[in-house]
Length: 271
Image (cartoon, rainbow, N blue to C red; front, side, top):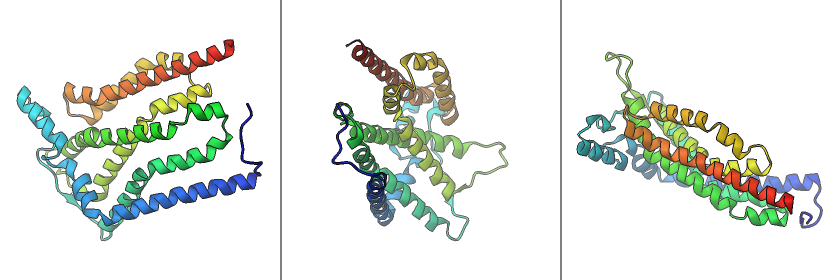
Protein backbone atom coordinates (compact mmCIF):
# COMPACT_ATOMS: atom_id res chain seq x y z
CA UNK A 1 0.00 0.00 0.00
CA UNK A 2 1.36 3.39 -0.94
CA UNK A 3 2.00 6.10 1.59
CA UNK A 4 -0.96 8.38 2.13
CA UNK A 5 -0.44 12.11 1.75
CA UNK A 6 -2.95 14.90 1.95
CA UNK A 7 -2.01 16.01 -1.54
CA UNK A 8 1.46 16.38 -2.99
CA UNK A 9 3.74 18.73 -1.07
CA UNK A 10 6.88 20.35 -2.40
CA UNK A 11 10.18 20.35 -0.52
CA UNK A 12 9.61 23.95 0.58
CA UNK A 13 6.12 23.08 1.81
CA UNK A 14 7.60 20.25 3.89
CA UNK A 15 10.10 22.72 5.34
CA UNK A 16 7.29 25.13 6.15
CA UNK A 17 5.36 22.34 7.86
CA UNK A 18 8.44 21.35 9.85
CA UNK A 19 9.00 24.98 10.82
CA UNK A 20 5.54 25.23 12.37
CA UNK A 21 6.00 21.99 14.28
CA UNK A 22 9.27 23.38 15.64
CA UNK A 23 7.63 26.72 16.48
CA UNK A 24 4.87 24.95 18.42
CA UNK A 25 7.44 22.80 20.24
CA UNK A 26 9.58 25.78 21.20
CA UNK A 27 6.44 27.66 22.24
CA UNK A 28 5.44 24.84 24.58
CA UNK A 29 8.93 24.73 26.10
CA UNK A 30 8.87 28.51 26.63
CA UNK A 31 5.45 28.39 28.30
CA UNK A 32 6.53 25.59 30.64
CA UNK A 33 9.83 27.39 31.35
CA UNK A 34 7.91 30.54 32.31
CA UNK A 35 5.72 28.52 34.69
CA UNK A 36 8.83 26.93 36.20
CA UNK A 37 10.39 30.39 36.57
CA UNK A 38 7.29 31.68 38.38
CA UNK A 39 7.09 28.72 40.77
CA UNK A 40 10.71 29.18 41.84
CA UNK A 41 10.21 28.18 45.48
CA UNK A 42 8.62 24.85 44.60
CA UNK A 43 11.17 24.03 41.87
CA UNK A 44 14.25 24.85 43.96
CA UNK A 45 13.30 24.20 47.59
CA UNK A 46 10.75 21.46 46.99
CA UNK A 47 12.52 19.53 44.22
CA UNK A 48 16.13 20.43 43.47
CA UNK A 49 17.56 21.14 46.92
CA UNK A 50 15.54 18.41 48.65
CA UNK A 51 17.73 15.38 47.67
CA UNK A 52 20.72 16.64 49.68
CA UNK A 53 18.71 16.87 52.93
CA UNK A 54 18.35 13.96 55.39
CA UNK A 55 14.54 14.14 55.32
CA UNK A 56 14.36 13.39 51.59
CA UNK A 57 12.42 10.14 51.06
CA UNK A 58 15.33 8.22 49.49
CA UNK A 59 17.71 9.30 52.26
CA UNK A 60 15.16 8.25 54.90
CA UNK A 61 14.72 4.84 53.27
CA UNK A 62 18.48 4.28 53.25
CA UNK A 63 18.72 5.44 56.87
CA UNK A 64 15.96 3.02 57.95
CA UNK A 65 17.58 0.15 56.05
CA UNK A 66 20.98 1.00 57.53
CA UNK A 67 19.51 0.90 61.03
CA UNK A 68 17.74 -2.39 60.38
CA UNK A 69 20.87 -4.01 58.93
CA UNK A 70 23.14 -2.30 61.46
CA UNK A 71 25.23 -0.97 58.60
CA UNK A 72 26.02 2.74 59.08
CA UNK A 73 27.72 2.95 55.68
CA UNK A 74 24.31 2.68 54.02
CA UNK A 75 23.25 6.05 55.39
CA UNK A 76 23.45 8.81 52.79
CA UNK A 77 23.30 12.61 52.98
CA UNK A 78 23.27 12.69 56.79
CA UNK A 79 25.33 15.87 56.85
CA UNK A 80 23.98 18.16 54.12
CA UNK A 81 26.52 20.58 52.69
CA UNK A 82 25.87 24.27 52.15
CA UNK A 83 25.47 25.63 48.65
CA UNK A 84 27.25 28.87 47.74
CA UNK A 85 27.04 31.29 44.85
CA UNK A 86 30.38 32.85 43.94
CA UNK A 87 29.31 35.20 41.14
CA UNK A 88 27.05 38.24 41.13
CA UNK A 89 24.64 36.78 38.58
CA UNK A 90 25.07 33.18 39.70
CA UNK A 91 21.66 32.69 41.30
CA UNK A 92 19.77 34.53 38.56
CA UNK A 93 21.50 32.71 35.68
CA UNK A 94 20.95 29.38 37.48
CA UNK A 95 17.27 30.28 37.85
CA UNK A 96 17.04 30.91 34.10
CA UNK A 97 18.78 27.68 33.07
CA UNK A 98 16.84 25.51 35.49
CA UNK A 99 13.59 27.04 34.20
CA UNK A 100 14.58 26.18 30.62
CA UNK A 101 15.51 22.60 31.55
CA UNK A 102 12.27 22.24 33.52
CA UNK A 103 10.35 23.56 30.51
CA UNK A 104 12.03 21.01 28.27
CA UNK A 105 11.15 18.13 30.61
CA UNK A 106 7.55 19.25 31.13
CA UNK A 107 6.95 19.88 27.42
CA UNK A 108 8.63 16.64 26.32
CA UNK A 109 5.39 14.75 25.48
CA UNK A 110 4.13 17.67 23.37
CA UNK A 111 7.47 17.94 21.55
CA UNK A 112 7.41 14.21 20.78
CA UNK A 113 3.81 14.54 19.58
CA UNK A 114 4.82 17.37 17.22
CA UNK A 115 7.68 15.26 15.85
CA UNK A 116 5.34 12.31 15.38
CA UNK A 117 2.72 14.50 13.68
CA UNK A 118 5.33 15.59 11.15
CA UNK A 119 6.64 12.14 10.20
CA UNK A 120 3.44 10.06 10.48
CA UNK A 121 1.90 11.18 7.14
CA UNK A 122 4.96 9.74 5.35
CA UNK A 123 4.46 6.29 6.89
CA UNK A 124 2.47 3.40 5.52
CA UNK A 125 -0.88 2.87 7.19
CA UNK A 126 0.39 -0.38 8.71
CA UNK A 127 3.46 1.41 10.07
CA UNK A 128 1.30 4.11 11.62
CA UNK A 129 -0.89 1.49 13.28
CA UNK A 130 2.11 -0.36 14.67
CA UNK A 131 3.61 2.81 16.09
CA UNK A 132 0.45 4.68 17.12
CA UNK A 133 1.38 4.35 20.79
CA UNK A 134 4.94 5.56 20.20
CA UNK A 135 4.28 8.99 21.74
CA UNK A 136 2.95 7.41 24.94
CA UNK A 137 5.76 4.86 25.10
CA UNK A 138 8.52 7.43 24.52
CA UNK A 139 7.04 9.93 26.98
CA UNK A 140 6.29 7.30 29.62
CA UNK A 141 9.78 5.80 29.51
CA UNK A 142 11.36 9.26 29.59
CA UNK A 143 9.43 10.33 32.70
CA UNK A 144 10.06 6.95 34.32
CA UNK A 145 13.78 7.46 33.71
CA UNK A 146 13.65 11.01 35.07
CA UNK A 147 11.93 9.78 38.24
CA UNK A 148 14.43 6.95 38.66
CA UNK A 149 17.30 9.38 38.17
CA UNK A 150 15.85 11.88 40.62
CA UNK A 151 14.84 9.50 43.41
CA UNK A 152 17.67 6.96 43.13
CA UNK A 153 20.72 8.14 41.21
CA UNK A 154 20.66 11.82 42.27
CA UNK A 155 20.73 11.20 46.06
CA UNK A 156 23.47 8.60 45.64
CA UNK A 157 25.49 10.89 43.38
CA UNK A 158 25.10 13.85 45.75
CA UNK A 159 26.25 11.70 48.66
CA UNK A 160 29.27 10.36 46.79
CA UNK A 161 30.41 13.56 45.10
CA UNK A 162 29.51 15.83 48.02
CA UNK A 163 31.42 13.78 50.59
CA UNK A 164 34.37 12.62 48.47
CA UNK A 165 37.72 14.03 49.58
CA UNK A 166 41.21 13.60 48.19
CA UNK A 167 42.55 14.90 51.50
CA UNK A 168 41.10 15.71 54.91
CA UNK A 169 42.60 19.18 54.59
CA UNK A 170 40.47 19.97 51.55
CA UNK A 171 36.93 21.07 52.37
CA UNK A 172 34.06 20.67 49.90
CA UNK A 173 32.30 23.96 49.19
CA UNK A 174 29.73 23.22 46.51
CA UNK A 175 28.98 25.95 44.00
CA UNK A 176 25.32 26.49 43.08
CA UNK A 177 25.61 25.96 39.28
CA UNK A 178 27.74 22.85 39.81
CA UNK A 179 25.12 21.28 42.10
CA UNK A 180 22.17 21.98 39.83
CA UNK A 181 24.01 20.99 36.65
CA UNK A 182 24.78 17.62 38.27
CA UNK A 183 21.10 17.06 39.07
CA UNK A 184 19.99 18.19 35.61
CA UNK A 185 22.53 16.05 33.76
CA UNK A 186 21.78 12.96 35.86
CA UNK A 187 17.99 13.19 35.49
CA UNK A 188 18.09 13.99 31.77
CA UNK A 189 20.65 11.24 31.10
CA UNK A 190 18.54 8.77 33.05
CA UNK A 191 15.45 9.77 31.07
CA UNK A 192 17.31 9.22 27.81
CA UNK A 193 18.79 5.88 28.95
CA UNK A 194 15.28 4.62 29.68
CA UNK A 195 14.49 5.15 25.98
CA UNK A 196 16.69 2.14 25.20
CA UNK A 197 13.73 -0.19 24.39
CA UNK A 198 12.30 2.41 21.99
CA UNK A 199 15.69 2.87 20.33
CA UNK A 200 16.05 -0.91 20.04
CA UNK A 201 12.59 -1.09 18.42
CA UNK A 202 13.32 1.46 15.70
CA UNK A 203 16.89 0.29 15.05
CA UNK A 204 15.64 -3.28 14.73
CA UNK A 205 12.90 -2.13 12.34
CA UNK A 206 15.47 -0.59 9.99
CA UNK A 207 17.91 -3.49 10.44
CA UNK A 208 20.75 -1.62 12.16
CA UNK A 209 20.81 -3.96 15.16
CA UNK A 210 19.81 -7.57 15.68
CA UNK A 211 18.94 -9.59 18.79
CA UNK A 212 22.10 -11.59 18.18
CA UNK A 213 24.16 -8.39 18.29
CA UNK A 214 22.60 -7.38 21.62
CA UNK A 215 23.14 -10.86 23.03
CA UNK A 216 26.75 -10.94 21.86
CA UNK A 217 27.55 -7.69 23.68
CA UNK A 218 25.36 -8.45 26.71
CA UNK A 219 28.34 -9.18 28.99
CA UNK A 220 30.13 -6.03 27.87
CA UNK A 221 26.99 -3.99 28.59
CA UNK A 222 26.65 -5.52 32.04
CA UNK A 223 30.26 -4.62 32.85
CA UNK A 224 29.65 -1.00 31.81
CA UNK A 225 26.46 -0.88 33.91
CA UNK A 226 28.24 -2.32 36.95
CA UNK A 227 31.12 0.14 36.61
CA UNK A 228 28.67 3.03 36.35
CA UNK A 229 26.75 1.81 39.40
CA UNK A 230 29.96 1.37 41.39
CA UNK A 231 31.07 4.93 40.58
CA UNK A 232 27.90 6.76 41.60
CA UNK A 233 26.86 4.68 44.62
CA UNK A 234 28.27 4.27 48.14
CA UNK A 235 30.69 1.36 48.62
CA UNK A 236 28.06 -1.28 49.34
CA UNK A 237 26.46 -4.03 47.29
CA UNK A 238 22.86 -2.98 48.05
CA UNK A 239 23.18 0.46 46.43
CA UNK A 240 24.96 -0.94 43.40
CA UNK A 241 22.24 -3.55 42.88
CA UNK A 242 19.57 -0.86 43.27
CA UNK A 243 20.99 1.08 40.34
CA UNK A 244 22.03 -1.92 38.26
CA UNK A 245 18.75 -3.89 38.18
CA UNK A 246 16.61 -1.36 36.23
CA UNK A 247 19.37 -0.85 33.64
CA UNK A 248 19.80 -4.60 33.18
CA UNK A 249 16.04 -5.02 32.85
CA UNK A 250 15.96 -2.31 30.16
CA UNK A 251 18.70 -4.07 28.23
CA UNK A 252 16.90 -7.43 28.43
CA UNK A 253 13.62 -5.80 27.34
CA UNK A 254 15.49 -4.35 24.36
CA UNK A 255 16.69 -7.83 23.38
CA UNK A 256 13.13 -9.15 23.67
CA UNK A 257 11.75 -6.32 21.50
CA UNK A 258 14.46 -6.75 18.88
CA UNK A 259 13.82 -10.51 18.75
CA UNK A 260 10.08 -9.92 18.34
CA UNK A 261 10.71 -7.51 15.45
CA UNK A 262 12.94 -10.02 13.67
CA UNK A 263 10.50 -12.89 14.15
CA UNK A 264 7.80 -10.74 12.61
CA UNK A 265 10.07 -9.86 9.69
CA UNK A 266 10.80 -13.53 9.06
CA UNK A 267 7.09 -14.40 9.04
CA UNK A 268 6.36 -11.60 6.58
CA UNK A 269 9.21 -12.68 4.29
CA UNK A 270 7.94 -16.27 4.25
CA UNK A 271 4.38 -15.11 3.54
